[in-house]
Length: 196
Ligand SMILES: [Zn+2]
Image (cartoon, rainbow, N blue to C red; front, side, top):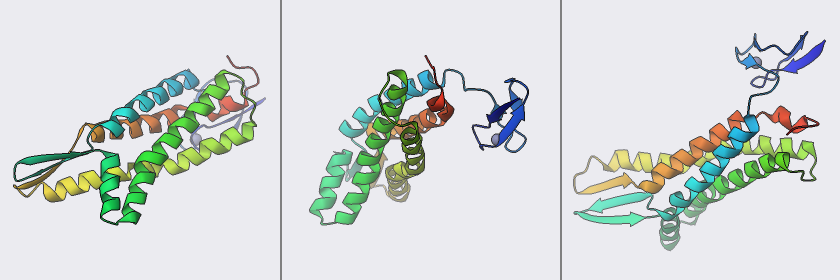
């Protein structure tokens, strides 16, 4: 007799063998381990890290006013909010679009790498770190909401126009890929005694 838990809803089953089956509570296919979970998650995290670079360097918003284009990156946006003394908005944008994504990516990268090479760290700490990342993940899309919202409001006007730049696309992709990387990861691997 073996015990196996559903990766999705954590329901624990008593089974005879490790043959995959459907979870009766959430309909998720329960397998012993998600195949190539670590490799795929690691590859996705690296991909998201690469996307973080254009997201920071290229313009997030292109504002056209009277036919003149004005482009600004996330950092430039934060600086201009600071100049207008909107410290709270600047702080929120900094946390949501600069700090959270990078902390999240590095934390995930660290967990995955720690499973590849032996880094001395309690498994409990790794699981805790992962849970924390999952919890803050939802908040890193704020910036995209802001751009989308502003674009939809201002697009109607012909002389004043806001469009999302390359950074907006990279940023959205980065956030989505990070979500996939975290989601694809099978936390049960953390507890495996001998993995390769
Ligand atoms: Zn389930």
